[in-house]
Length: 304
Image (cartoon, rainbow, N blue to C red; front, side):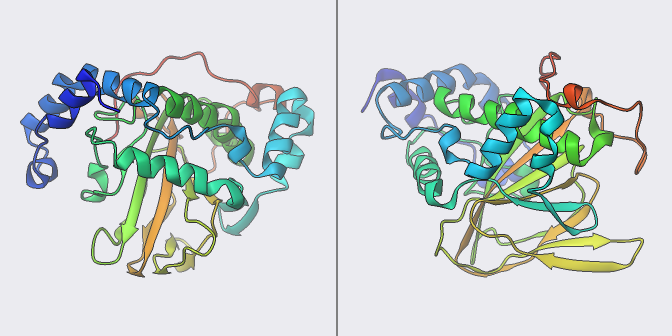
């Protein structure tokens, strides 16, 4: 499974961990200089069956979610069935089954093949440096450019995340044309936690990719309500997702045993715009408007 471009990509010397942590100018230059090589390498990796023939499509989703979302796209007036699947488990934080736990093994196997491909994949700098994670969106340097994954990723954002976010958080409409995403791997003895923070997003979707029976200890997501002066530690099962405003204060508690795998996905407006005022909602948006895909192109910039 070796081609000239794949060989070239695999032998390019990567920046050191310290250089990436310090955001050295040479790191930015590294990803930009080699962008076309890496994009071509991912395409050749896929053509050479590097992904092992694993299919990423809508069969990976929870059947209930898929049925409700498809129905709403065909008839937006029936979007209430989508909202009914989401339970508010902390003020402004909703939980629902997103991926089918029985199908998660395929997605995880795909991501493991990605990690073993030998093609440089940029880790999320915003998490100190999560060496087990990678950037998913084309706006990011060193992103996962495999065509099959990109088709799956864009469908996830356009067909599922955006209309669901608009339904649960009406104030984000108009601040949701831009996408951003990364994967994380929390592991005891490695990248294990993240201090309290808010996201530079209008809305954040956090999906647990752990397999059934792939248990870990600790690593709860702590949500903090500074007004009510309370905090709650939340956990979520394989294939489950948490969705919340980016401004919601949250942290990842230390993982004590095992590993936790996640996709973290963001929506926001052009040039990083997010809703300005808590609870403020502009002109009412119809169900028909919610179930649309913005025509505004990517602004090309990444939050980190």
